[in-house]
Length: 113
Length: 116
Image 1: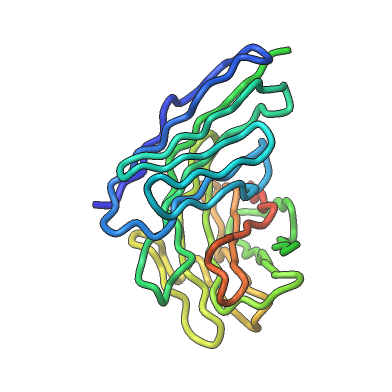
Image 2: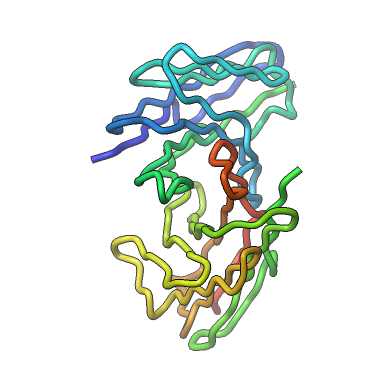
């Protein structure tokens, strides 16, 4: 069964303290791994899509990497505004149903000033 | 950039009544949209796939007669919660992707439903 597992469940950081979030997956034939940021009471905000092992993408203080079994979201020198829940998702289904996602439970990041 | 909009952002309804939530793609067309629900401090759970011009496809355990989905056009999908009960209270979110572009999947802002 396809599964997406995120760890840790919660992460408390001091401003400037870099760290990484993990997303491990067991899917046959990965066709895209997505990272989203979700603020309380709002819909997920798209961050990155990764497709193949070794791929990396960056956006401001965030960097996402992908291996054959897991993805990491690195937060470099975080600021309080980086506080959010970060969701990882994998794309499921046949090519004709290309946008169906299965989500992990998320990692809630709190950055203290 | 591409935007997906939901309406209403929040709604309170009485038990036994029905409530409709709209999901619109504002600057692109989407033959397929997805509906998720999210309970507090939990992740998104896919409910159903909304297909323009055909019936929706529901995930296992989701009652199709309770959660009616209509994909009226290439930019609009609606979710109607029928005969709502307090346990239907949740955060409902839709997603869509521009046709031919599966690289980016956009989500709406979500709709809070409270059934009293």
